[in-house]
Image (cartoon, rainbow, N blue to C red; front, side, top):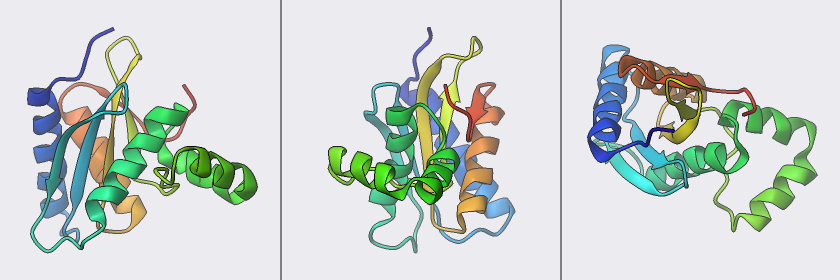
Amino acid sequence: MSTLNLITATHISHRALAIGREICAAPLTVAILDGGGHLISLQREDGASLLRPQIAIGKAWGAVALGKGSRAIAADAQQRPAFIGALNNLADGKLVPAPGGVLIRDEQGEVIGAIGITGDTSDIDEQCAIGAVESVGLKADAGGAA
């Protein structure tokens, strides 16, 4: 299994922000976590609101912690709200069940980290995340279970 390093994480973050500018997204915040859920990179665009770093980290952290993209976690929250609420209690409130948290997989399909983006609609956040991960030759997993 390969690992996600600072150089790659920073490149992914910059690509996510560039994609956001290309599509005229609202100011974005991008968090990249390693496979253990530890923060590698956090970028917050000028104009992004106060809680955006915590939201971006929460989207990515939930993806790593549960082994599936935050779109799938959001669907779980709709179908099983008590269960996701209980998980969020166990996670000390770190889980953000909304699209924009995407697993980052290496060439062999192993999870090496996650990206979380917030600032625009959840669908736009997720679009920027997927595009950024794929732009560096890694695999983006927005919803499927590991």
